[in-house]
Structures are given as C-alpha cells and as structure tokens.
Image 1: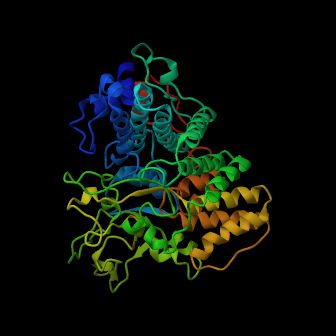
Image 2: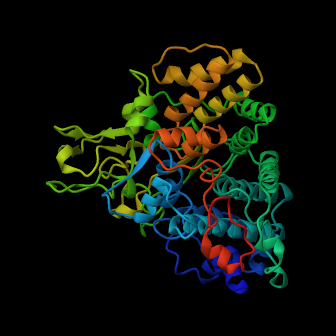
Image 3: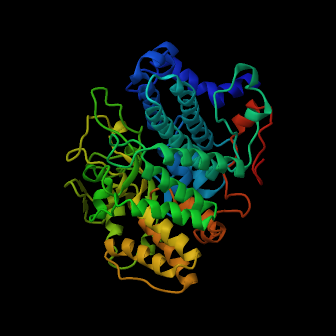
Length: 501
C-alpha cells in the first residue's frame, strides 16, 4: 500500500519519463532516457530536461490533467460562470462538481491531483540534474528558474484546489519515500512559502521578455505570478510591488482587440506573460489534449452539420448578465447560438438553436479549423493556453492599490482595462472600488479559470453559489476533497478536508 502511494505521487511521473514511448505528447527524448553522462557532457541535455517539464502540461482529457477539461471542471464549471453543458447524462463526475454533490471518490479531483504531481515530479528531476550540466552558472540558473516557475505554478493550483498538500520539493531517496514528510499534507503556509521561494528565485534569474525564446518563462512572468500569489495571501504591499515591476518594465500592454487574444494572431502578444505553447507537427500531438474540442459546440438532435466538440463548459446567463451594456468582451467570450443561426469569426455557421445541445459556448476556447493551424486531429488542436496576461496584472495592481488606500493608482489601472472594453471610467470610494474591481475580474477573466478561486479568496463563495442554485456548504466546498485513492494508498496518513468523509 505504501509503495503504491509512492508510485502515485512521484514514481508514476518517473515511470512515464523512463518508459517514454507510451506518452505521445512528448516531442523530445523522455527525461529518463537522458543519462547523467549525457547531462555532464552535452549542454543541450539540460535544456531537454526543462522541455520535458513544459511538455507535461499537454496531458489531459480523461486521464491525469493539468490544463484540460478536468481542470476546467474544477475551476469554471464549479463556479457561477459556467454550467457542465453537453447532454444532461454525459460525464456524471462533472455534474457532481457542478452541483457540489461530489465526494472524495470523484475521478476528476483524482486526475487533477495526479496530473499536477506528475508535473512536480518532472520539475524535481530536472532541478536535481541541471546542476550537473557544463553550462555556465548563469545559464544553469536560468534553466533552474524556468523549472522553479513551473513547479510554483503547479503548486499554486494545488494549494487553491485542495489546501495543504504533500510538499515534494526534491527527488526522494528510495529509503525515505514512505516517510511522513512525503506521505502527509504540509500546511497551506508551508506550500505558499515554497511557491514564493520558487518564484523569487525565478524572478532573480530569468531574462526579461524578448531576451528569451518565445514561450519560455521570463522575469515578468515570475513577477506577475508572484503578484497573484501575494494577492491570495492578502499581502497587499508585495502584490502591489510585484505588479508594479511588471508594469514599469514597459514590455507589456493590453492588446487593442480583445477577441484576438485567444486566436493565433494574439498568441504570445504584448498582453501575454505566460502561455502553454502548442503547435502543429507531423505527429499532431503538440497540443493540450481535448482542450478546445471538449468545449466546442455540440450538435443536437437535428444535426444537419458537423459538430465542433463535446459541448462542455457553457457560459451561464449569470455571466452574460454581469457585462455592462456595450462591453466588447461579451461577444468575444460567449458564443450565443441564435434561433436563426450564428456565424463565427472564421465564417463557420451554426445553423440555429435547435441544431445544438446548449444555448452558449466558450468562444475563448474556439480554434478555427480553416483559418488557423490545424493538422486534422480534433483532440489536439494547437491552441495555446493563456495562463497569465497583462490585464490580470493590472487588476491585481488595482486591487492591491485600493487596499493600500492608493485610490489614484487603483482607479487608473482599473480604467485602463475598462477603456479597452469600450466602457466609461469608474470612480468611487474604497468599498465601491473593491466591488468594482471584483466585478471587473469576473468579466475580464471570464472562462480563464479564475472565478472560483476569486470568490473563495474574497469570502463570497457561499453567497454567490447558493444564489446560483448550487448546494454549496460554507467551510467545506471552498476546497475540493483529497482524493480517496491517494488517502488509501497512504494508509490514511493523508488527512481529509473538512466536511468530506
């Protein structure tokens, strides 16, 4: 039993790396196939180790998941932004999350846990081996910074989803994998300190945007994620300072056309701090598994056309109602299927409401099969996942400034975001500004995996969820259950979150 738990938390990822050929999402040699001798003698080997950590983010579907459908279920579908969608009987595990009737045996929470720990295992292996490289110290530190940024990203998701989780910050020795250190949960504070330490190292050792290959973690990405982490810790001064560092770098700006952010034309744009990179290749595998297709419009009973996806993650009427009149972000966020048909930006026409299962779909997840790169495999459409962008940093800065009673800066940065949306400037006292910034985060970042986490940290989750008709229980559903299979494999040393059996 204890040995199996080791496989789940750490060695499962290691087995993926050493077996290699079973994982089609890798474009490079698996990390396990890179020997220490090669690392010591081939400067490129250390970079391959880092690439393996980036590429783990393509996993997903109905298996271990970091960025795909199951992560979407725990973030957007769990919130008031989206409903499960698809057909009423499709994917019961997602319906349990949507309705907050899930328990610790829900397969989605298990797969999201496993996916993130596979990423952490790859990161730890890379961090152990990179120092062996013959590269100059500064180059090795930059590679270590990239990996520590990614590990922080994985842990930031985990701590917001589950609270305290096992702290695995290195490759365990065979003699210690069953120790309490790796078999029990660290505190929330401990995990957040690990995240802050990793991001601080990354910010101190990474190059600015433009000085690195496109898509790699940068100094600005680390500073931006640090700002977000400090926002969750309610450390307003540090959130302000880190966001200010990104703003003052002069390397970022809001993209004039909001809708372009999620198209190939907007990939890695001036608005982007960090994206999961995808692309087409001969194997058609350089993409997040079923990310786009799982959210695409699904044909209903009267088909008459080829459906574009599985139909999950439908924007709610509540989200639509949250937009002010004339907000340019609404038509860029929601595919609203009209009775007489709807034409998408690339000319594709959905015949009408009676041809699809659902009223609304996520426009930000749509990838054109005719106007954007596409190699013919719907499950692997090469759409970058935008993890962190400049408008988020502006709103972090505005919220921190407001809490620090710096009303001028809060107002200025909030209105930068609103002007791009075609909305008038807003002004108000501190309490009004706080609520407006929260509202702005909802509509600016809709369908981008922030809403559930935001309303939990704001202390409003129960009120908002119950008003939306969900069976949300305070002091329970702010976190998801620790997966039962993980608790079983640990010999019940992994404690459960409050309210779950």
